Image (cartoon, rainbow, N blue to C red):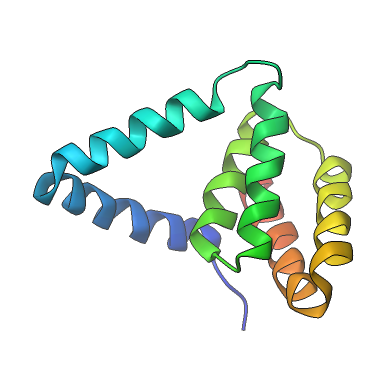
Amino acid sequence: MTKDYKQITGDISQYTAELRKASPDTMNSFYAMAKAATADGALDKKTKELIALAIGVTQRCDGCIGFHAKALKDLGATREEISDVLSMCVYMGGGPALMYAADALRAFDQFSA
């Protein structure tokens, strides 16, 4: 089964918008936290997004993989950088991480096309 990460992120975005209407305080707080956590600091934004992609892979979260793969494409990450991070995911997470690492590379390629 091939996953369409543009479709996955689009579907999630539609319903996070709905959730934002239904629970604005929680969602606004989440987005404020995300903005603060991803801002350049001791680590730059791209490095933080590489970490986020790795966490998405090891937590087996398709939405996380999609959103962070797109962010990395937008930040100018290379396929080689993505592959390096995914290698660490496989090393630390074994076979299950390998399945999602392959999907993460697919997501990056879909957003890069």
